[in-house]
Image (cartoon, rainbow, N blue to C red):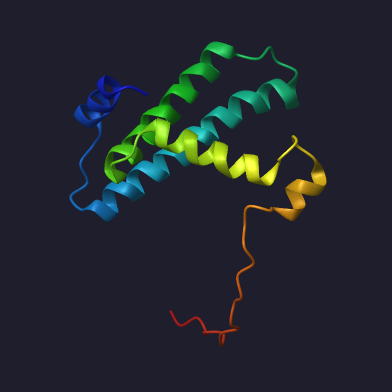
Length: 123
């Protein structure tokens, strides 16, 4: 995305009052819009309705708005996200996608997790 779009989003995004609330609002927005995009595809898949590509494009645009909002909050660009994603996927799938490479996740280092005591829920 270009800086004009970043500025456009900055001028239209709701300010929640704290940086934590701003990020939460943006990520919840991504999730909500992804759900709306999923519903468009579900209607096509489950109910054999024609795929409403205009509606799907609209929801994808809304997702991009919220992704740009997160980028603004993190002081990064879409180009930064794309470069990081390409580097990760080149490591994970050096010769192209395979189910085996997807399961192996070569881009991830194993993380040792110490077991922790369960906390009981208290209302």
